[in-house]
Length: 364
Image 1 (tube, helix red, strand yellow):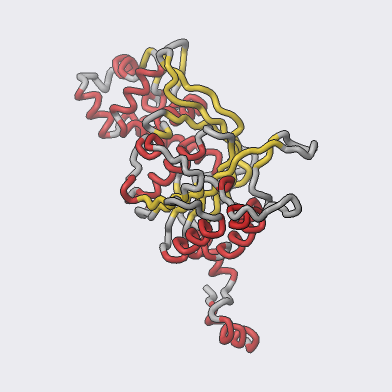
Image 2 (image 1 turned 180 degrees about the vertical axis):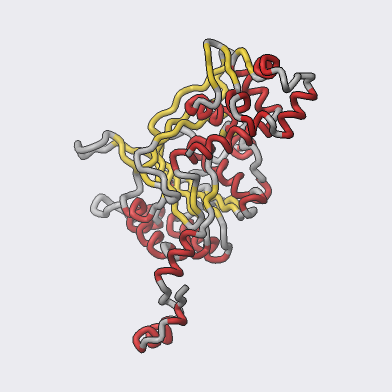
């Protein structure tokens, strides 16, 4: 593998003497990019994204207000806080000032005490100052995850001082452009992730889509993963709304997912992203769980010998006095009337969820 020190031509030696180790081989850069870790987002989104979000990348989440962007970002933060994914530091820029206790308390696995929340105390903070704070954290804390909620709420200092009249153009897009340029090479080197939340606004040009993302086009040049919320629907159970279904569109993906891919995530109040519900939906789509009328059957166990003979499955059958050699009894045990019973069964026996998720990944 070639390294910067392997280049001994006169020009390269002069460049590195003046500017430092700024010359590296293509192999070195390629290997570094290939070795960046991919962190899962949600089961359904991971399928569309090609695995999740790659460290060292820029992410945009765009959608209408109250559509699930903040919840989804905080759920990803909870995953990043886990030991499995490096216990990464989380910095949350509360530019909107609307972060509620239900946002922090309603995310399963989120360690609230470890999140650094940046927000104004008395006087509002300008866009320049917020972004300067982000830059300081990214440069000082490798592997950090920064959530800017939202980019749409950042206010340039000139606007805060009421100095902008009709003759001035909005300054935020230019500020954001400079910000992404300054950190363009720093974010991958630090293996950080910057998540920028933006909103839809009406397209008044008369051309193209009726709604477009705000905050200018420059940040979209920098972004590695861009997700848009197409629409949401209430998620109801027992006559009550318990959450919402969020339909996403993938515009681009750092992990290699195909542009134009779509996914449906399920947000349950008080829990956040409902992994069990998402996995059940994917299992139905891939034929790993079958449905006949109101009945659901765990085909991923019954039709896969490696799963049926799994020690944990054998232990579960034995604990429930089910004869593993009697296929009729085993089939009856893994058959449920109504999705709620299947859901509760998988929640109670989480190892089955892991088996099911592994089977889904193998099919990809």
